[in-house]
Image (cartoon, rainbow, N blue to C red; front, side, top):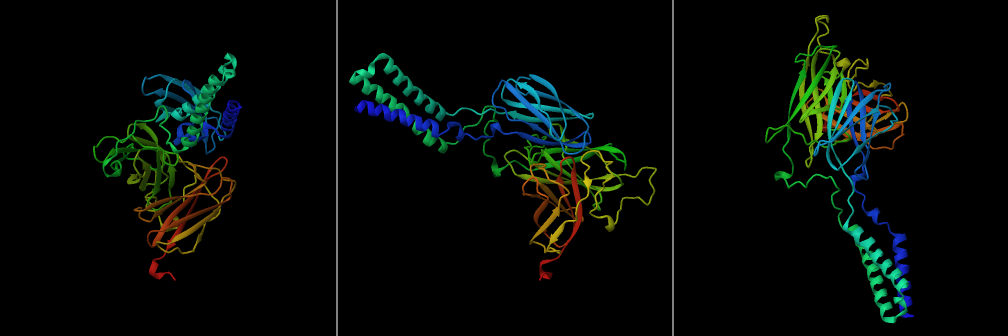
Length: 452
C-alpha cells in the first residue's frame, strides 16, 4: 500500500506540474521580437520590419510598411551573413498592409540587410537571434522523462511486484519529479542567458558609456540650389578615437531621426536617413527657398545614452530666382510648413485642427498641455501615436516628446515644459492610414516671474 500511494502521489504531482506550469513561459526574451527600422527612401517614408525568427536554418520574413501614398514600390532585399558571407536575395513591395518576403538564413549572428529602391540603397546591420534553451528546461523535461521511464520500465519488467524493487523505482520516480518541480519553481528567478547570435558582452566602459559622437555635415553638390534635389550627408565620428561611429542602435524605430528646418521655420522635414556606409548617413532633400537651414539629429549608440547633434548648411539661390526671394523669411511665415509636396524624402501633408495649448501662454519651466484633434484614426508611427517637435527661434534648442495614447484615438495629448521665455516653433505629427500629417503652430512662452 505504501508503494502504491507513493507512486500515485508521484504521478499526480507530475500531472499537476505539467499542466499547471509552462516551462517556456518564463523565457520572454527579445530573440523573438521584430526589428523595425524607419527609412526615408525613394521619396517616401517607409518602415522595414524584420520578423523575429524561431529557428535557424529557417525562414526570415521581411516586410516594407508605407506611411505615405505609394503605388507598388518594389524594394530589392539582400541579406548577407557577416561571418561567412552567405547571401540571399528577394523583393518586397511597400504597402500600408504589406506582404512579407521570405528569405532563408542558415545561421544566427551578425547579418547585413541591403535595401534598394528608387535609385537609392541603404545598408542596415542587424543580428539574427534565436532563443536558446535553458538549463532549467533540461532539468524539467529530464526529471519527468526519468520518472516516466522508471514507472513504465518497472511495470514492463515486473519490478513493481517485488517490494524492494518497487521502493527503488518509486524513489527514483519521485526524485525525478522533485527535481523537475524544483526547476519549475526556481526557473523564473534565474536570469535568462543570451540568445544564440547575440553580441559578446561589453566590458564596462569608463565613465559609464561610450564617448559622444561628433558630426560632419556636408551636401552634394557642395552648393545646393533652391528647387533642385541634393543629398545631405552626415558623417559620425567617435569623439575619442576619431574613427567612424558604426554602433548605432534602434532609437524609436530608427537609427537616426533627422529634423531639417529653415531658419525662419517655414520649411520642416522629419526624416530618417539611410546608412550608406560605416558611420555615414544620407538623405535626399529639396528646399523650396534659399537661405540657412538647421539640421538636428537624434541618435543613440549601443551601451550609451541618447544624443542630439546640431549643424547647419546653406541653400543658394538659382539664377532664375528673384532677389526678393532671398530666404530671409519673415515672422509671418514662422512655424508654417511647406506642403507643396515637391520635396524628396519625408515631405508630409500639412493640415488638421489648430492645437490647443493650456495655459494659452505657457510659463517657462512649468508643464504645458498641447492637444490636437486628428483628422482620422491614428496608427502608430515610429512606435508612438504622435510626435511633438519644438524649436526655439534661433535653433539652439530642439525638443521632441511623444503622445502615449492608444492607437486609433483621434485626440492627441502632449505634455511639454518650455525651458525659457520667448517664441517657439512647433510641429505635431501623426500617421493616418495612408499619410503622415504635420500640424505647424507657434507658442509664446512667458517668464516665471511674470506668471500669476
